[in-house]
Amino acid sequence: MYGGFMTFKKNKKELFVFGGIGYGLLEILWRGKTHWSMLLTGGLCFLALFRLFERAEGFSLKVKCVVGGAVITSFEFVSGCLFNRLLRLNVWDYSHNHFNIKGQICALYSFLWTMLCVPVSLLCKKMRRL
Image (tube, rainbow, N blue to C red):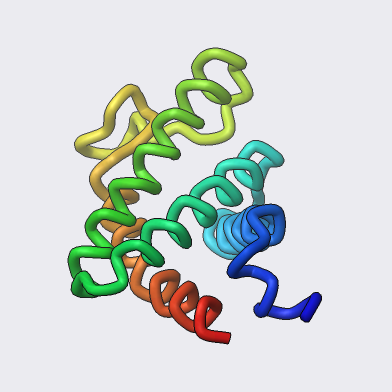
């Protein structure tokens, strides 16, 4: 069957687009704006999380969310170093937040990414079952 959630299980491109759009919308709701680089980052994050949660089916939600939060934070750090520091696009700057690393990641957002993995994990589970 083509269309709907049925194809997400097998189609990396659709997972990537779904994640990119979802991340962009989340950022617009949170900050009031987004950047094209965040659509790429969100797509890659969602694709990685979908595969991670698929392989970690037997793990507790808590473990999945902690690992998922680390995955998102890692993607954010790499993206930040590329887009903010190397290309100087100035998409975000966490240097004013406590416990930041080079202004690209910080403890607060790592925690929020971990919490975001609760609904993302449940969504991925539902998408795999449909």
